[in-house]
Length: 153
Image 1 (tube, helix red, strand yellow):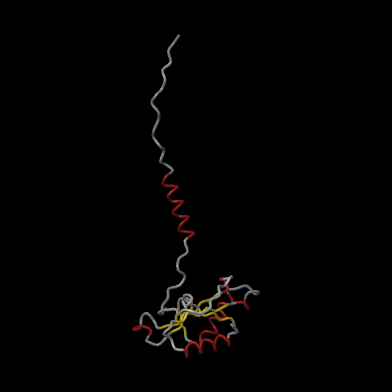
Image 2 (tube, rainbow, N blue to C red):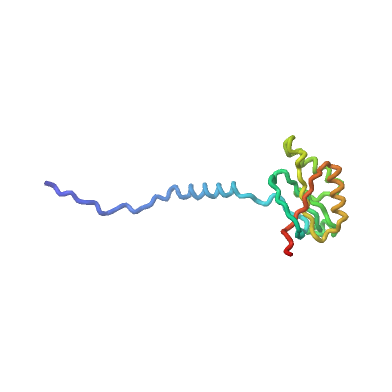
């Protein structure tokens, strides 16, 4: 009878040829799913605190207006400015901006649009009143004032 030899040497090489593919798939996945900041804020934002807060459920119906002093006063001046999306606008342009925001929504949701006003706490009430008047003219009746958090008693 013939003797059979046992192979005691095991193959310890781990195949790494698919490793770059896996790394690139993970990289692509995280690049696609990461949400980046949608807008660059061009005005100063020190949001005041509130005494009563209410959280909204459907955030797709919210459009944001920012009110504050420009971060670049040499270019935009010292007076408080209104920022809608990525541009600075005047109070006379608010009606046109609201109509553009309504056009982005479906027909059933157009009357449910909510405008969130993020005003700097150093801004006087005059520009806020002007914005309120223009929003009434644009038939945007739901106005929300953004705040940081509740005031501690």
